Image (tube, rainbow, N blue to C red):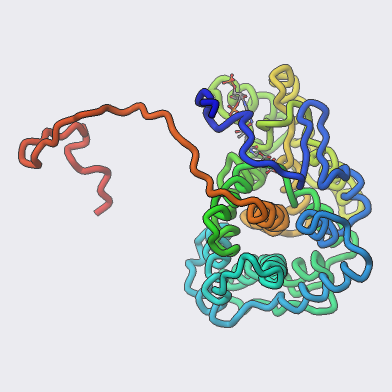
Length: 392
Ligand code: SDX
């Protein structure tokens, strides 16, 4: 076996063989199962895309209808899960609520039959169907309201927006939201997908796989960046402040949210599509005060960092779209998760098909042969007077 050198963040190290998606970070190309993202965004619905990712090929009309019908049927969440969610603190972040409630699904659907195709299908359907319902239910409950039941007459995207507000969205809004889901559905071996595959490799249940991936997606270096972008645009406040903001970040070596990527060294193709969608939405529904700030920010970041290959990523424009659709800022990352469930499940299936538990190695940097010191003879090495940051 070849022993590789240690690479922080496993940069450039393949963690799996996968035929689900492909990124060319120099040319700005993204494909799902060999099909360019631009074509899927234009022609496919999110559920059609999810089917493609999970089952490896585009569904026939009948296959898609059957899949959509199954998903409609499984959108409701059990009252005991709703009761559990009612105990969540209103101030809790919706990503934490989603991680907890996704894991809780495993309590209700605990059969673990990973070699049974019917079980796999059911888990895929349940997770795709129920994740939007969990996100919408928490949103309503934290405002003190009962969750809104799904509407079986509505498609996936329309129904989610309906469950958030009890109002049917305009068709253009639902269409654009559906495209956003397609764009976020999958992206090779990103951190949350890696987390999903590691969890899957232990042969645990798919609800634990998704819960672990949700926890990983939440961080601001990953999916959580879309929320941070909006907070940053609010902080900048006006086009006139953008240059000073960027210069301050450069001086303080502070990362600018929504920019940079481990793989892309050009603008993320999804950011380009999201920007076009935002323009279309603003044209139809009225402009957004933060869009001009975003454009100026992108221009100045490119000026300062373009030579280093730092450009806008998927998280830069998505929040502007969601804001225009009336979605609260802290739901942006849960929406990313709703979409990415498709990719995580595709990787779950692929991992199971050729499973070996993940068990990498490490480079040990500690000591050896240290003598045990009895407790009474130990000297504290902490300079905080032994308080260890106590909060009581
Ligand atoms: C997603 O992996 C995926 O595919 C993820 C994703 C998906 O669909 O699953 O595409 C979704 O997570 C998008 C990324 C969202 N995160 C952000 O927008 C947060 C801001 N960006 C970064 O923190 C950063 O660019 C990462 C986390 C995205 C990538 O981190 P890397 O590859 O470990 O790069 P790095 O932090 O080591 O940076 C390399 C250099 C450094 O400069 P030097 O020390 O070499 O001089 O680039 C600089 C960094 O300081 N840099 C930035 C920057 N991103 C990198 N400088 C300013 N602002 C930034 N945003």
